[in-house]
Image (tube, rainbow, N blue to C red; front, top):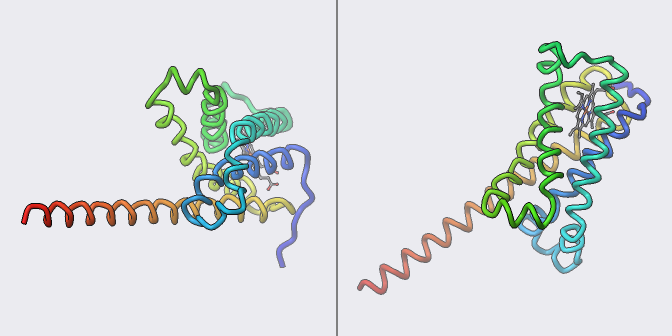
Length: 185
Ligand code: HEM
């Protein structure tokens, strides 16, 4: 039988950061994987508040990291600390980059690079799965199973989304080559 621990404030903050982050990924994934949800207006509503949700995720993660660094008295002058907390620190760097460029000014200034930069969000998804799995191994709290299901679930849906996009791109290519073959006859 798996025994679950009670959770502390830093754990709750990390969990809420994870849930807010997962919510930012939902609009595009829902539109492509579950197009029928468009009729409910949910993807559009989530999209409207995506920037705000992302910034909330950043601040919650900042507090989570801060409290844990304090509690464990982590020494950032020791290279071992970076190695042990590699996934958490890398995810946090990504969250920071995304939060500071989540404004119209950055979209205009960075142009095409903005989209490229914001694709980092998908790397954070894999890093975060690893972070929770690694850091909570052997002492899951009541929040851990929900967090794992949320992050692993969104990662799976993201992979399905990539597959659907590839399929429809291939279909488009086949259609175009059929049309050009017909017109060349
Ligand atoms: C984007 C950033 C981050 C997110 C979203 C995040 C999220 C989480 C989540 C959801 C948990 C599991 C909580 C539970 O199941 O009870 C966790 C655990 C943990 N995180 Fe993070 N984390 C982030 C960054 C960091 C950083 C920067 C550090 C420290 C340098 C850190 C250190 C830890 C530690 C030590 C644990 C294990 C806590 C325990 O043993 O109870 N995290 N994190």
